[in-house]
Image: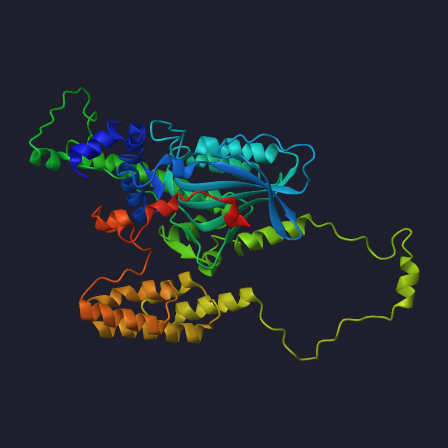
Length: 469
């Protein structure tokens, strides 16, 4: 897409316009967003790869029946869903689906309702919390983050209402930056073995189009009053003083971000800062304190169903003949543990031992971090380290800078035979290996190398009830 066409899209002069305010919100403003996904997200909106129809907010209500979720009400995008009918069962839980880029206030326009907003999310959250028939609230999140403005107000609101009823964050499949700030305010954070959290950092972009304008034969002359009036104009290079001002704002927001996450999770702010905006998957997220439970949608539903199941009356209750029943039953004592026999280690103890062994091992830092982010899975530390070393050795032997792929292979737990096959093919054909997400069709048409390993459309995939059955 050429520059005039792109500008036409920004200002609503094409058949697939985007909201001009969205471009102004994303550029020259601090963002709480996963860096690579953030760039792909902005590009996707500007190039019409995704539209706001892909990110409509939905609030659904479920009831657990025999351990399975039964959907009994859907809001179909309305953040203020109507109250459940009086004949609907109690023991329900509400699911607020959060996906795509996040903005402060609704941005409706020619392209639809716009990205999901913190204001709409707050309304949906309060409505679910105030519904007397809803016993738990689930925030089901798949978002790379979004604007800094308005995020902490929503996070504080969720944090303030903790304790009124259980609030769960289900990371399905990632909650980065602003989305993770929202998740951190919940009582419990569920993440799957491949789910990702973190990216506690702040980023801002200044786009300088002055060179492109010069090549197009255009010249912009600013007439202004006030020395800082055109500091962040895209028509001129960014001055050093403007960059220093922006950095001060970024630093202030970073301090607010890290302190807020530390408060929500009950950990030291130094521990949050030490992650340096890194991301963590599965068990590694639990190890650093960024998640509480390893599980999927089905695991969470089972957990909520167990919580809503009332315990049967205790034996010996009034009118049940319990005393006589107890007298007739032989005495049952738990089997005695053989003296001197050690109890098997718990999963938490195994995870802690795994983490300690990986950190103490004589391996490069990128290898140890990849192993921690991958998690223990079913391997003990010696087996995991042996696997990681074999992957790194294979990448080093392939030459051509392919050793840089080792950490990605380890983090994704790629089988060593697959690693060797891909490396051999890459060496023979001298082509790039993509170990992350597959490229979408738009990226193949030349929308930029940074979008090649991403499929932005999947970020905004609508939540369908059939996915939850």
